[in-house]
Image (cartoon, rainbow, N blue to C red; front, side, top):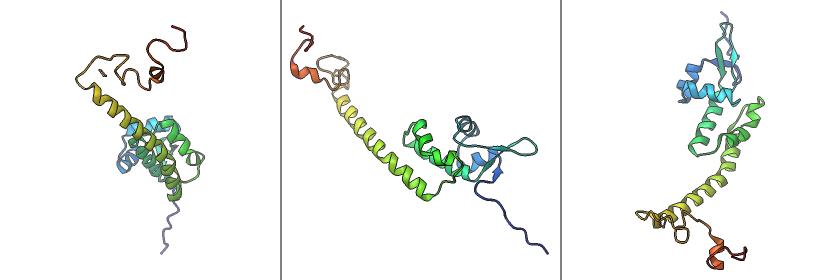
Length: 154
Ligand code: FES
């Protein structure tokens, strides 16, 4: 009796797009989009159907996490570069990627808090005054130099 040996590696293309969609929780159309964008790859089987590796699941998980965090796709692509060149992503890669996104997230949270604080003064106002409204004229450094157009001699 011969024993069957599993020769699949994480990079062996084994999954259909439907299976990848079910396991990742990402729609088939989104998977095709990411493939067109070069973020994941497939190969064709003898019946000319696309097949994806198990490593694609990790890539999709990172894309999903990045998008939930509001990371632009271009930055996600940069973070995934080792995987795009065929290297499987490991736990330490995700640790590195999530660390690199943390500063960006902190910065965006800070910016959103500033916008929220400015917006508080505008609620039910509607004036959009150039002099008064911080939403309309944020970071008005010239205001400290007085009215008019400082520096232009006006
Ligand atoms: S809309 Fe009036 S202060 Fe912003």
